[in-house]
Structure formats: C-alpha cells, structure tokens
Figure 1 (cartoon, one colour):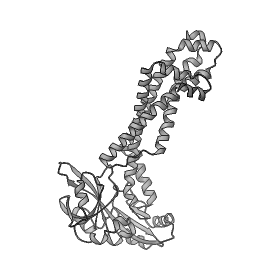
Figure 2 (cartoon, helix red, strand yellow):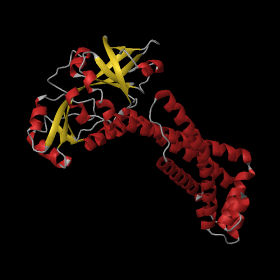
Figure 3 (tube, one colour):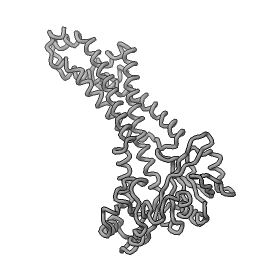
Figure 4 (cartoon, helix red, strand yellow):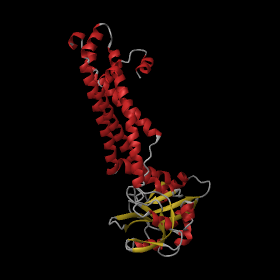
Length: 392
C-alpha cells in the first residue's frame, strides 16, 4: 500500500504512514466512518424506498390525466369530487374516456393478532382495460360478480400459501372490514409504508366494504386522451372548464411528482429519514476531525521542523487531506457493504423496495470525501497560521 501511494503522490505518503503508526486508532476511525456511511446510506435507502413505494400504484395506472379534490396532495388524501366530473370531462375535445376511482382502507385481522391494512380500489370493470395494466384489467369480467376481488400477491402479513392458492380453484375468502370478499386472482404492485397491499373490487363490492362512502363522490376521476393528443394540452383545456377551488387537474406525471414531494419532503416520515442522514454526516465528520486533530497534535514537533526548513502550508494541508481521503475511502467500503446487507434484510422482511443503486453510492462516496476533507482542513488550521517556534 505504501508503494502504491508513493507512486500516486510522487512522494513519501507521510499521511498514510502516520495513520498506520497507531493501528488501533486507525481501525477505530475507520469503524467510526464506516458506521456513519452505513447510517447515511440506510436513511437514504428508506427515503428511496418511501418514494419508490408511493409510486408503485401509479405504475399500474394507464390514465393520462387525474381529476381530484382541490386539496389532494397524494392519492389517498383530499376531498372527494362529484361524479359528474366524469361526464363533464367526456364532453371536452380529445378526451377518449373517463372513469371514477374510489379508494378506501380496509383491515384484515391476521391470525397472529395484528391487523393488516389494504388499500382497496373500487374500479369500473367496463373501463379497466383503458386505465389499468393488463395484468389487472384481465380480471374485469370476474369483478362483475358481487363480493369478489383480486389481491396484490406481494402483500405483507398474508400467509404465502394463501396467496399462492388464489386463482387455482374456488375463491379464497378474506374478511375486509367485516365483509367476506372472495379473491379470484392476483397481480403484483408491492407493499408500501402505509398499506400492506392492494385489492381491486367493483364499485358494488366497494360500497359493501365501505358503506359510509357515496357512489356520487369518487376520490379521483381518471381521464384518457385520444390517440395522438397531448395530455398536457388536454389537461389545460379541462382545467379551464372547472373552478380550481373545486377540482384539481393534473397529468399522471404531475400527480406522481406531487406524491413523491409530499411524502419525502413534507410528511413527518420523510423529514425523519432526512434528519437521520444528516446526523450520519455529522457523526462521521466529528470522528474524522477528532482523529486528524489528534494526529496533528501528536506530530506537531515534526511538522514544526519541516516548516522551519522551508515546507509551506500547502504541503501540510496535503498531508492532512491525504489522511482524510484515506479515512473516507477506508470507512466507505465496509459502511457500504453493511448498508447493502441491511437493505436486503429489510426488503426481505417488509417487501419495501430497498435497492442500493449506483447513483446513491457515488453520491455518498463524494459526500464522505468532502466531509472528511472539510474536517481535515479544520484540523490543519493550527499549522497554517502558526510560526515554527510557536509549534514547539
């Protein structure tokens, strides 16, 4: 390693030699930086899983435009809108079809005593091929039957054997809000932070599960534009027809952007994860600063001698930055490996989309090196401003 660093720097790697001179301190610093790196990656992984999970149901949608209540920020909040928006939208040029979407949260008592929550979508079977992925729309005919539904096969808390048996014979019964619902098929979306899975039913079944809701006020209205039409342009035409204080008109992409922003930046859970990442950066920076400050103090006389014989401040800053870079790189590798292992464990246990992507690794690596470099420069301030005699 010393030979390699000597070739890279074109000089004796003084910073490296000072670090390995006290192997125990060096190992402790690497562990500390590694812990901070894993903490940052862990929190960023949760933020990524949060933003990924909230977009999962949108990936199954084939709508071009979504009409919602004026205060709707996510798919599940906001006031309902009048069903007449379906017919009003159909009267606008370049609108090919429109359909209401009803949303509710139903609970199922799992044998272990806890309740599993399901996001239930009430959809019109006649328009499912227009607005939902083929894997879901294929069940439109069977959903016409009362008290039938299809379920996300990746749902949490439901026994795997039960999910595997759906669609192989008679409907499998699931009690949702006290109503027996026969599951006749399955699809795949993925579980999220606020729901263990998704279930699709017809409006007739939906109002049996949620009798408190009204069929005249859906949560959203989906709109599909004519082939060749620009969804953004049509959305602008629709928005002109409705009072913005009563109806919010967005393209599907705009709705996704709003959802991600609200969940990751404005919602408490996103703020908590972001704060955790900042704490990881702070912890790592403090550890590196303490180690490098101690290194400067322990070798202050050697630095004074070098300064007295003519070495300039950039040389000493280079040595300290060399140490900072070594600590950052040495701590990043085990920290990233630990975080990747934790990603796999959490994804397997919860079904959340915890994935270690290359962009996140590069971002954290650069951030680690910058934080270590800043800590190193702060530790080197004593050398920069002092005269050789003042250092003895």
